[in-house]
Image (cartoon, rainbow, N blue to C red; front, side):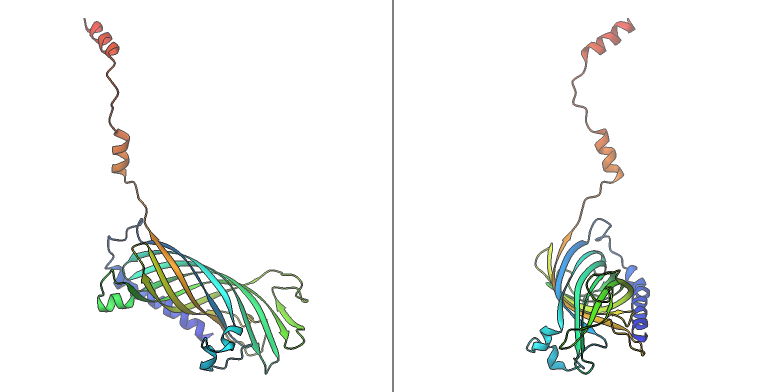
Length: 273
């Protein structure tokens, strides 16, 4: 549980330290500017009890078959808002799969995750080195909190016999209600600005989930499990127009181009006589 507490502490410190950053709020990013939508596609990697990796570096490179066997596809959709050039807030919807195996325990599992989270991104090089705002590359770190729904089936290696499930019936034939737990994440990213509207990016993050059931394995010594996420994606930046009260008043007044009604004027003149 200490890891999860550290994530929450880091996110809280980022919020507190942002007081100095907010004091530099720029009118360049009012409510109608600095918005972005995007999507990411990448690989998820499980960290927990049913995992064979044991920290072996060469198994985490694309040159190892283990790299592809233990990683699964995941994707997310992003909506974000730049507060000013150094700090942004983002919301994510993520869907993906998880997998892991442990030859010593003679078991493996397959699972699914669906999550919602929010994070803050800090462009540290821009801030500390006063880099040009229109630089092609930007580098940032992010931290966030959210909720994750998950289910999983644990099986015996070789026989594929189901040992236990979470979010499924005992025989694994059909799904039941997914389990929901809180999540904290830390990560870093690199973005490349293609033009004023489009950006491509690479991100990697560690997502700590407040559970020891992510792999449907329930040992007596409980510890936090989670997954890594490496992705590439695209961002579209946009703004929209806001109509102020002055503009609305101006439009409501308009200009009257209708010809004068001579009949009405003549009637007024006759009455005066």
